[in-house]
Length: 275
View 1 (cartoon, one colour):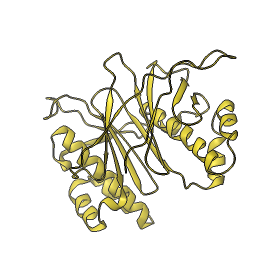
View 2 (cartoon, rainbow, N blue to C red):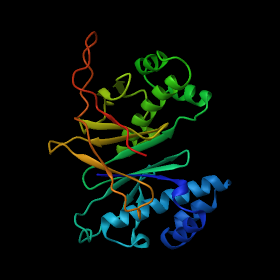
View 3 (tube, rainbow, N blue to C red):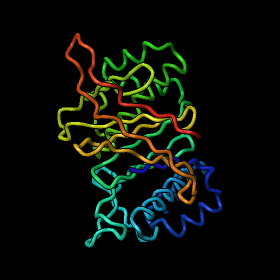
View 4 (cartoon, rainbow, N blue to C red):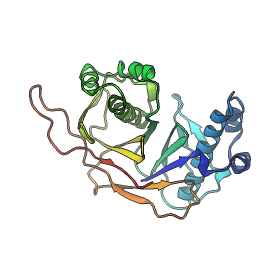
């Protein structure tokens, strides 16, 4: 599994425009043209040139050759090729998130992946609204922290995990966030996960990241019985030769303990990567 974190300033605006004009398809260019504010257009263009560059490297195809479709719920996916991909395999799943001038892209060769990124600069009113979408137990846990950055961090930890899980399912905001629940360690790590009733995957691995200070990210992947997986965290645009930061994914998140008991198992894990 590979994860790319790319700040908008990793690409000069002129370079972004040139790459977008050559790599993006007609639908993507039309979407970019509809943004009213230049900062939003730039965020979109950086994010989608990142997707095409990283997928091209994994697939062995040219960036403009990639055919990206969308599900009925709007989740993008790479069109399969009848003979498989030039660099092996027939399946690449990817998921994209962007916020606060950062784009986060996850790519896996098996199963599904969901990612989310948020910056600790959200307005207090927006975070309070987000908090009301969680389960009562999650709201109680978040409000145990004093108002300010400590509480904001708890809210956004829950939010990024819920977004990552929902996006891995291909449901996005179509899945009510009070239908599934996380139990988090006060400092870091997923202690337990209660999936919604329609979850057929059974077990999930969750990773929390703070790749740069005050930028929170989460990754969700279905768990299998294979070797303990790991991910490669790359920072910057995918033409940087810097070595990635390798992170082991945690064990599958256990189910919550019965009422009155404590969750079993070690935390799901959080990593702080070097900037």
